Image (cartoon, rainbow, N blue to C red; front, side):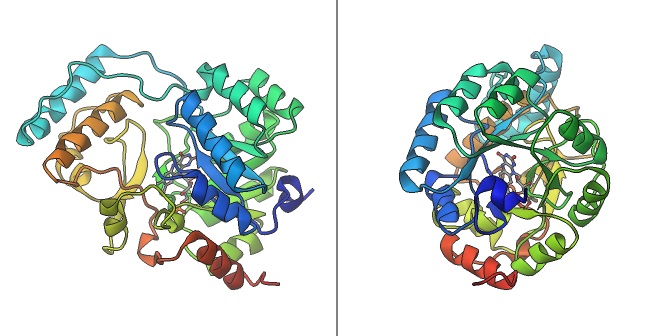
Length: 348
Ligand SMILES: Cc1cc2nc3c(=O)[nH]c(=O)nc-3n(C[C@H](O)[C@H](O)[C@H](O)COP(=O)(O)O)c2cc1C
């Protein structure tokens, strides 16, 4: 069965689930335009996730996906957390702020939270996708029994094979160009493969439908990847600028400032690609201390950004963006979808 049939969508275009940027409006606009809308719920509580899913179901009758994080949970390492707080302390002080005494696990993993599984089973979105790993077998089984399509991001062949062996329906090939967090299962190993090579690798070695993600800003790039075996494409950065995303004005301005992107673990404790700012220039020094584990480091990163924002300083924002961000266009989601479809030559 093709991806279009599996997901019951008209065009092979997904807006990426983007925690902190996705909104029910953006998801519904993409779904109503014939693509797959997405909700990034990795940072949401069960109640906030429920609210977003129900709101999206009010705004569209078309299929959409919800997305959660499947990181292996790390118990709080006091030493690593304390070292990281100490390393960032001078930055807080420059902003007239005091760093916290300790760090919290701000994003529990889907794997440790069956309330999230029960929410998905109760609200029944068409598809659910996972980042950073594969859910437990009982979770996959329950989703399958409920008829919900499952998808997992992979950045190398071993991850893709594990996804296939676990009985997941679709693999998302996330290339090194991608904005946001690397979907790597092991935060200490990143093969750094580009999107087009991943698509070729996966289509040659596994049977699952492949969705290409990373650096796709227009329909020509999307069609190139489809011609090389991808069944669909997932775009994040291109949609961040849409009026219906929840990106703030500093983030929107940064996207259009002809930025350069870089991968850093300093903001959250896991590698992620974003616009070069004070994190790259002042924190990622050759003498940097080992970063605290995810998501503890993210707790501190968000607090540093909040302290800077109080001083009207946006230079510690987590402005996630892919390496082709300079090709960004100012279009609302409906027009962006229309443009992508025309460029892909699929207009009817
Ligand atoms: C702002 C932003 C937030 C993201 N958040 C998530 C997320 O919550 N879950 C996820 O699976 N992927 C997330 N991603 C990664 C996307 O799924 C996708 O791999 C990436 O956007 C593709 O590259 P592109 O940004 O160049 O299109 C995020 C990407 C961006 C840009």
